[in-house]
Image (cartoon, rainbow, N blue to C red; front, side):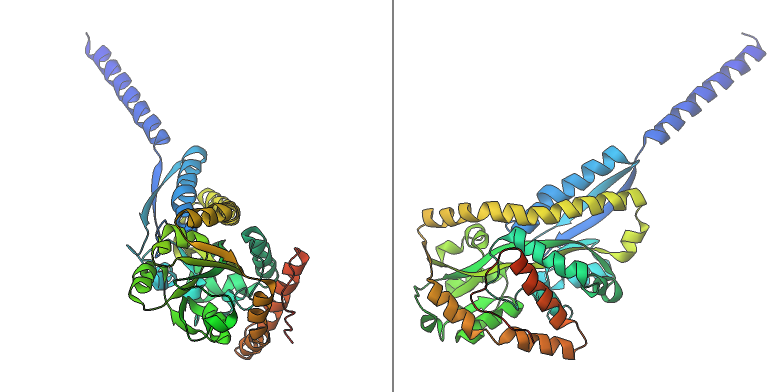
Length: 360
């Protein structure tokens, strides 16, 4: 082969090799790593949906629709952040995305527990989401505060199952509750206080041991937790009083991390977050009767209270929403506006309150 032919062959090989590298580069997907966490374990429905829906769905859609690949580093059950530290974890950038209950942020997010301030609301989690969305859509502060004060963006609301009362003792009237040590989280402790019980602040990871050792004798809790955390082993009575399905959890993303994400990845995350939000309502609604049935199979005494007992408990709280509204207004927050919107939205969605709350 002549020198000229060798040179030509070399050029061809070089071009072919360059073409191969170019094709490989074009096909390679840039990896984006995101740390996602919750202080609660996957036994909680919303965390289970983070792990089983949000993470795989974002991963799949980003891979299919963009040149990027998202890899999630997941940490649930307190392995990255504790239940009361998740907002701060997202704010500081320890994690990129966090799911948490606003109930653990009474100082930072006092208004975001507004549905708790209206006890005996809807027991339908999908309706609870509609009520919450009516408030968030009409009161910009509710979403903006996350960005303005806590360096994070709210991308989904999270509905809980309907709250009832699980105990290790039988009870039939509000008088039977007086003096009993009963746990709650954040503002729902007021439901107990006004009824004459002794409220105890707690969190689900501590519930089993605390019930077992007598730190408290009951929990304001939805049936999914009574099943998934095996609280039926230490609390054989579950009473359907219907405190309400509360939307007071959220999924947030660190603002600085969000801004660095490619626009098409942001779009997909926002899209999946919206679907995730809806699923927290529908999945909880579908699971409720199954979980009630589960409790019965585990030997739990499940019963519903009479309308009179519910009305008695609600009447003990009748003046509280107006008190909270005034307190929040005095702190410069739109308390009255939020509670009035929530009251009307619940009624517009067919809910009938056992007592007519007056906000002002």
